[in-house]
Image 1 (cartoon, rainbow, N blue to C red):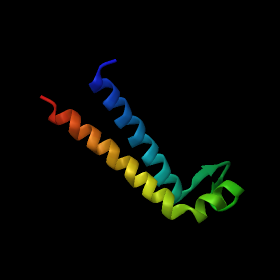
Image 2 (tube, one colour):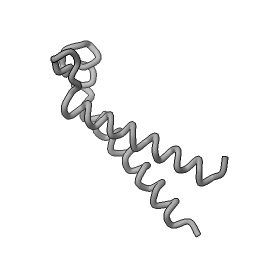
Image 3 (cartoon, rainbow, N blue to C red):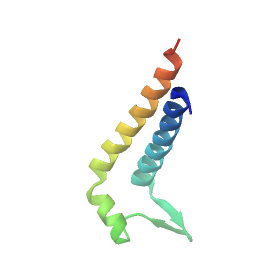
Length: 75
C-alpha cells in the first residue's frame, strides 16, 4: 500500500468512528421500537463518560479532516 492509501484509510475509519460516537452519544439508537439510551449498564457508563466520549469523537473527526487536508495538499 502506498502512503496516500494508508492516510486515506485512516481518515475514512476515524471519520466513520467519530460520527458513530457522536450520534450514539447525542440521540441513542432505536432497537425494537425502543430508544437504547441510559438503559443498559453500557449506556449508563457511556452517559457518565459522555463528556470524554464527545471529546474523543471530536478528536477523531479532527484527525479525519486533517488527513483529508494532507492528502489534498500533496504535490
